[in-house]
Length: 63
Image (cartoon, rainbow, N blue to C red; front, side):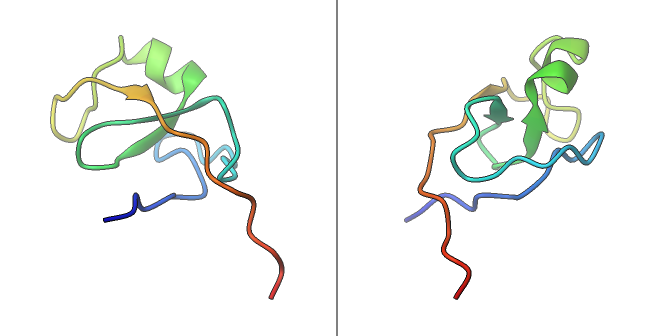
């Protein structure tokens, strides 16, 4: 099963393209930028899970 690569931070709406190295996710794939992750002490506000670096994906073509 593939990860759902959400395009922006759920807190500040910073764009996080698939290849962004600064994206963080929890086990439910809630997505945050590194600045918001640091502000939240690495804990997801939705599920209280740990935020970890999201694996980088490939950029989508504009098809």
